[in-house]
Structures are given as C-alpha cells and as structure tokens.
Length: 171
Image (cartoon, rainbow, N blue to C red; front, side, top):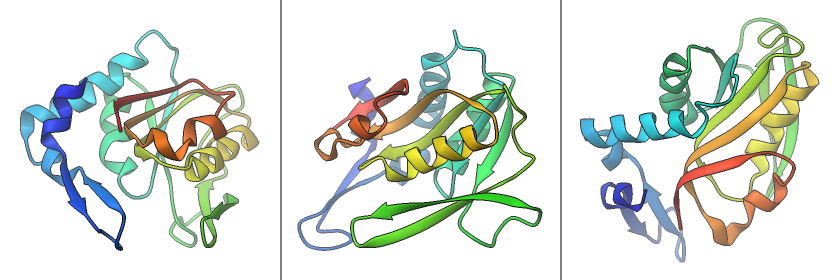
C-alpha cells in the first residue's frame, strides 16, 4: 500500500519545529488516490460484520461515511464537546500537554452492534482509545479500527492492543 505514500505531502517543522507533518490534503484532492484509499480501507474489513462506522472529528468525517456506505453500514460522528444537539456520552482522554474530550449521541449505537472506527491517522492512540470506549459504553462491540496513516514510532497501536488495528500506510 506504499503506493499511496506518493500522494502524501510531508511538511517539515509543522505545526512546530521538529515535527514532520503528513498532509493528506494532497491525497484527497486526487480522485484516483481518494478512491483507492477509501476502497482499501473498506477492503480491510470486508469480511467483518459492520453495523456502524464511527468517524472522529474532523478528518475521520472524510473517510468514515464513504467506508460506511461501501460496507452498507450507518455512520456515527464523534465530535468535540458541545457540537451534538441531543443527549451525549462523553470520554475525556489525555494528550501530551493536557486533556481533551469527545462526545457521541447516546442513542447512536444499539447494544450488540458491531462498530468499525475509522480515522485518517493514528499517532499516540488516545483519540482512538477514547472513541472505542465510547462505543463500548453504549453497548457496541468494536469490530476494528482502520487508519489511512499509522505513525508507528509513536506506539499508538500498543495502546489499542486488545483491538484489531489496521493501517494503509505506516511511517
């Protein structure tokens, strides 16, 4: 799947010195690269029963609904606090310098539904783990987690050790 790497722009020293940012906007603007990415993400989980696909704000919103459509599943957004209009479940998680919180509608996932979590990138795994915990707190079963990019040197996969984690591109 390394052929997709050529569509990703590497931006040194963004957002701060010493960080190498992997910019997927160059992948998304190319119709073939976007189609290959979504198809391959879907194919990673085609053998799984998937009832819902969850995508995290904001770049997970780009890929997850298309994967959901491909797998004939529903889409559930996980958002930053205060963005969803009905009753929510929330999960606070730790960042390198502080904490953040995610919310999901309390009625978005029915008990026993199998849920695939899709995002653009896994780094330290905190956002993905908080999302998996939200799914489970609603009675859902995490069918797997899929990412366009994995930054393996940040060991996020280790934090998600009890789940099936798949990525198209690994740095």
